[in-house]
Amino acid sequence: MPSRRRALLILIALCLLALASFWAALAAGSVAVAAGDVAAALLGRDAPGAEVILQLRLPRALAGFACGGLLALAGALMQVLLRNPLADPYVLGISGGAGVGALAAILLGLPVLGIDGLAFAGALGAMLLVFGLAHGDGSWTQTRLLLTGVIVAAGCGALVALMLSLAPESKLRGMLFWLMGDLGQVLEWWPPLLALVVALGLAMPFARELNLLSRGLQQAQALGVAVGRLRYAVFLLASLATASSVTAAGSIGFVGLVVPHLVRLAAGNDQRLLLPASVLAGGALLVLADTLARTVIAPQQLPVGVLTALIGVPVFLFLLSRQPR
Image (cartoon, rainbow, N blue to C red; front, side, top):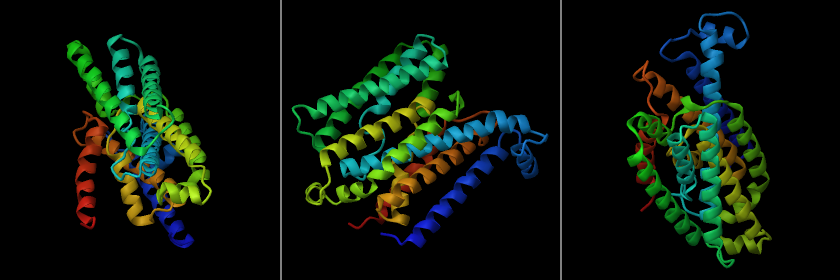
């Protein structure tokens, strides 16, 4: 486990990275804003581009940080729960259920609030379905939970493909952007940010038990951990964090898979440090990716999920190449 001084330095470095990502998000775009004007706008003074910063870029950056933090936190929790380094927030079909709900709402012509509502309902429905099927007669193993999630995700994927094939041309672009992740559709920044604060606040008291659980089920039980109750709590918390992020910004891949690995290389596997560090790193990564998505081919915008995949794939392949044979 890292020393307290090293842990503090890691958290400070990640906080600085998060602040830098916010600064880049506020200054960059189709209309560049000077550093002095960004500072003046944040202090409430009149400055060129102040309305763009306060009404468009700052809320979007806050929402992006919250969604990235939620995905990274959910990924770290899932990897401990399933004891599988390839686990990510979407492995249990949560994203698929949200996609079915969101695309159904788009087909019905519902407003953005209705799309968010059905997306969250679909995510909860998938979570309850996986939980019910995996629990069965009371025996719940990591393998059974993982296989159930894969099957539910495949079924949701088939429904998504069916709706895409039936959708009119006028709605296809919006449906594809939602499926690839798009922070431009976020209505309010505070719901995902509130969900992030609550999720991290609920996860931190379990950090010591999660450290023991990561060493093995029997060892954790021998040391007095209520494994059954802990696994239920972790599954529910990770699922709700994923649902909150997907509802706000759509399906954004690789953040929850790659970020916990990168943080683990630098900070070790102590969940007391890994969880908050993953939140900071995941939030900063998504803010930077969204800034690139807005500026690479400005004034047009790319789905942020495309950028996270382009960043995540080579990074994850590099991490795999560093693993011992």
